Amino acid sequence: MEYRILGESGLEVSAITFGAWAIGGWMWGGAEHKDAIRAIHASLDHGVTSIDTAPIYGQGYSEEIVGEALAGRSRDQVQILTKFGMSWEGTKGEFYFSSKDNSSRDIDIYKYAGRDAIVQECEDSLRRLRTDYIDLYQIHWPDATTPIEESYEAVERLREQGKIRAGGVCNYNVEQVQRANSVMNIASVQVPFSMVNRSIEDELVPYCIEHKKSILAYSPLQRGILTGKIKPDHQFGEGDSRAGSRFYQADNIARINAFLSLIKPLAESKNATLAQLVLRWTIDRPGITVALAGARDDNQAIQNAKAIDVKLSSEETDFINKHLYALRLV
Image 1 (tube, rainbow, N blue to C red):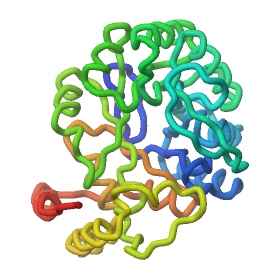
Image 2 (cartoon, rainbow, N blue to C red; image 1 turned 90 degrees about the vertical axis):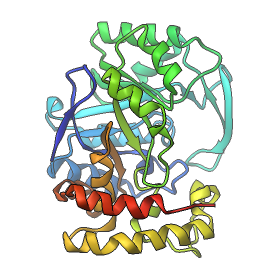
Image 3 (cartoon, rainbow, N blue to C red; image 1 turned 180 degrees about the horizontal axis):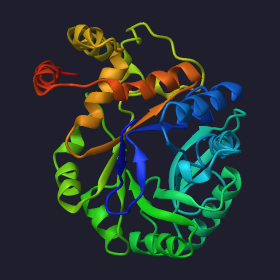
């Protein structure tokens, strides 16, 4: 495994980080509890030291699984990354959308990052995670009803109290990062990034490189489509939100698969899967520090971790990019 420092925080994380959204069940269709535990254990056993989760993933369930999986492990050998600012209880803040919880009950999701709410969320996460500190604490989505400065004053207090080691942001643009950074030294920015979703390279990546902020890329496999296993007639299970995604429309699936067929021989020449090649390409990209990769079972987790063994020459990266830049989605 390769390990990298987040910004100027001194916090070292694994370049391949376990993404725990899917195991929470919410909007992904879920995973068997025992399989989720095994997936986390397999990741740790293969060099992955960092786990990214959030309270909203299964309304606490993902954090509980992470806490259970880490019981008995050396806490200082694992980095827990979690979030705040999305509530499924109450109506404070900015209404986000309606969804169903893991029991198929209707719930309303609000984005709220008020000072007192952050303090309470941190306590709740610590309890579910069975720990006394969080390594990286990140706002999940911008909350238009609360000044960013108020939110990050609360996060800075948590850092001073030793309840978190570093603060980060998710889904922020450059101006929002700057405002948060005016209150505390932000370590990282977590945003969607993949071969087919590179919009952050216009402004956010140059800013983060210049100001020494790390980027955590989520959905680097574009929620599975860059594995090559999704076909135009793919049927999604109940509760799986990918069915409504632009990338999962039949025409785009066909275009993406055509691109993948061009780079698959390169993956095979390295005894790697397409997913491993894509993950390697992602963490080699300028400005990208970490790729978050989810897994529902131990085999997927091991395959994700082994992506670190893939090495790409500059000529091979250029070959991938040539075909990638010719890809046009509708």
